[in-house]
Amino acid sequence: MSKDAPDATTVGPLRALLPVFGENQLMRIIFAGTPEFARVALAQLHAAGFEIPLVLTQPDRPAGRGLKLQASSVKQFALEHNIPVTQPRSLRLDGKYPEDAAAARAAIEAAQADAMIVAAYGLILPQWVLTTPRLGCFNIHASLLPRWRGAAPIHRAIEAGDNETGITIMRMDAGLDTGDMLLMEKVAILPADTTASLHDRLAALGGRLMVEALELAACGGLAPVKQPDQGISYAHKIEKHEAAIDWADGATAIERRIRAFNPFPVAASPVAGASLKIWESAVLPGQLPAGARPGEVVAVSERGVDVAAADAVLRLTRLQKPGGKPLDAAEFLRGFALAPGMVFGPAAEAAS
Image 1: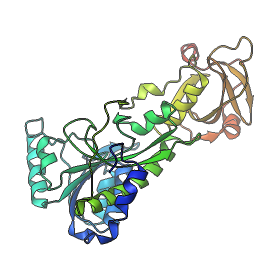
Image 2: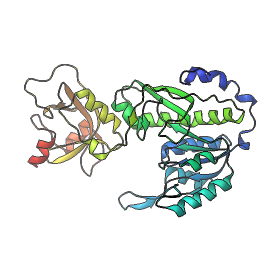
Image 3: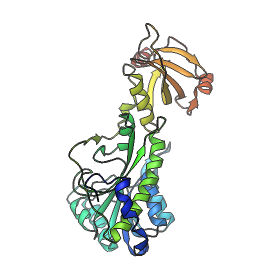
Image 4: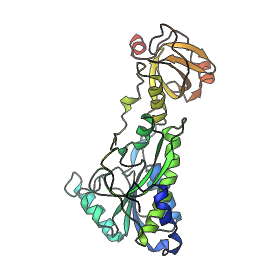
């Protein structure tokens, strides 16, 4: 394999070896993951015929208006397909929940897996986990490592204005997304992409690449590549407070954040006594109207609500009021009056 990052061109020759591998079902894998991104990968691995004696996922969490305990997407899939599930609160034998960790260790060892596949699991894997499976632990990471290591690579790639991202299959080590790269494939970030739309494409790609990586591993066909020391960046966890729009920022930066925070936590800004969620927007060409203040509504029409940012006008095309649902601008304005001269932002919140 090339010494460069293993992208779609460098893995091509390896994929040609796939037909000579042994039967998929002879490889036993443990799967560790929690949200929908991970469920997609688990479903593809299951469909490919890998034997899955154990699934690890986060404990059930309160969700919805009634705050009822809800199983993760991964757990729901596992139960539907009669795959044993364990939900430790921690895997650290010397941590806060040693009983959970000890029970998980017993289950992992009993599974006698060839490999563990990890996708958006949410718990740190101690060294004993990394070394228990015969082939080690493999991670499906939604970025082109070493760019966007960490918890929120899809959000941060859109927010930063990256033109491309992708999936990296990585052999896990004790660091934060620092392990050797095994397979990588690039995906273009489209101008209208949100975290939701990009997530779905990357989830499908991640499952497919993980199947290929395991098939290669079964015959010794993987060639690990160390991550370069240059180009490292960290995708820090998304915090709810980041959703507040600062209209003193540039219009392009705000538009990117609106797409990055769709569907969570959803960009928001107060106006007319209510905090509105902004789901979609577009930067308008041309200069700001003379005297327009950041956050000021400069025009309203069925096409959208035009709001001044620091350097241009941003048209809000899909909005949501408290207790309502997301609506296109024309329909939204029939139930929530906005007019030129109104101001979005902290000043509007203080006035209310």
